[in-house]
Length: 177
Image (tube, rainbow, N blue to C red; front, side, top):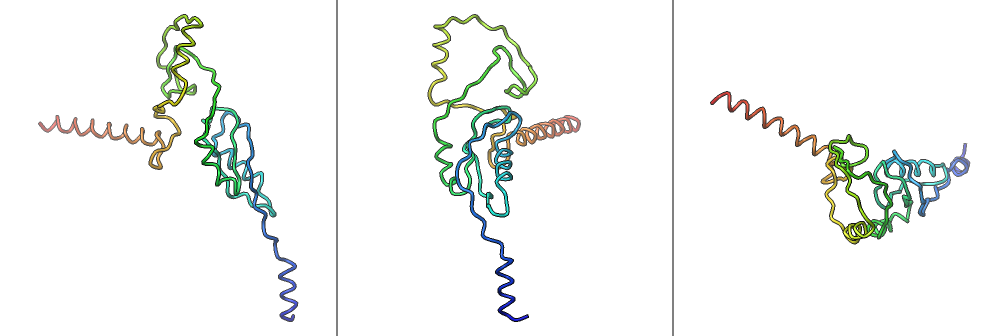
């Protein structure tokens, strides 16, 4: 076989360059999926021999129990996703008054219950004003919020192990005194 015919065979068998998928997909995130699981599913659905959907991300995490609009940025659109992270957003929630759970969310076990006071429209309007504008929130320890590459659940487990260890040290110290 000549060199020229080998080059022709290579060109005939050459796989065409993949087209990069770019844009924003609006997904109605179902309950039970994490935002990252939705991104992975979108990447998988756009994966093909002709398309490159490797670069993808979401514009803000929704809890696994939350449902609603989750914009997924693909390709070049990922460069603009940070603008959406800081954008104003609105949420609608159904809440249960008078109960507190061990995880601070609806998935936890109820640990405290209290009677619910009677509200009139004026008092509800006054209370609602407190929730307008920027809010500072301390997420529950079981939250998926990440800090220094470890989630709060892992940090809580570490703290509990340290408390157990300190208790053992205290017991040893009292035995030797």
